[in-house]
Length: 113
Length: 117
Image 1 (cartoon, rainbow over the protein chains, first blue to last red):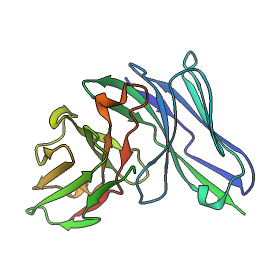
Image 2 (cartoon, rainbow over the protein chains, first blue to last red):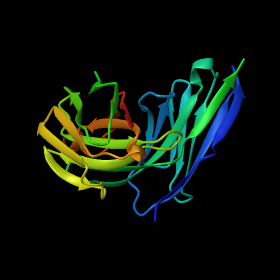
Image 3 (spheres, chains in turn orange, red):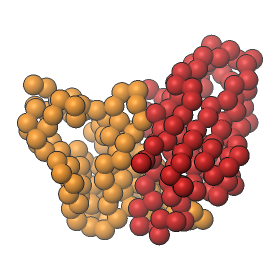
Image 4 (cartoon, helix red, strand yellow):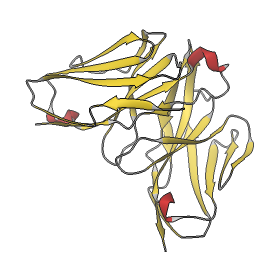
């Protein structure tokens, strides 16, 4: 089966650092994506990991350990606009010119002043 | 430009109506996707088209009928829906085989908020 776990909700203070964890057990693994989704809007792509280690992109970093089935998204210098849901998605298939993502339930992050 | 557009933004329909959702991208992507998302839940894959051919149907009821008339357009035809089909319907696209496998990121449209009465 496919199982992707993330905390349901997190709160943090403006200017702080927050780490959102994601663990996965999937039949197949071909990369892990993080998306940000504001309420009622489309998910927007944040980061992608396929090899172990840390990928850094400005205020956002994402880490992957394939042997542990574990990833995290690190958000630094939090801003109020970072209040959103963060979706972890595992690519479980890639063939014939398309890819298949399985999404976790998402972590709702609330940033307070 | 990573824009995927969807129309309409909102749609209210009765259980006997027939309506269509439209998705468009001009990024040259060859894979297009339909997802359904209920409130506070993750997106669930419904259909995948690759090079205008249906590649995945995730056992979606036949009251949902996808169509890919060309590489830029994706439609979802709706007929005899149930109130539990009310959700946000998201379209996404990715480069597909052109991407060289490495990322092939899916880019999402803003969605159509569907309410079935």
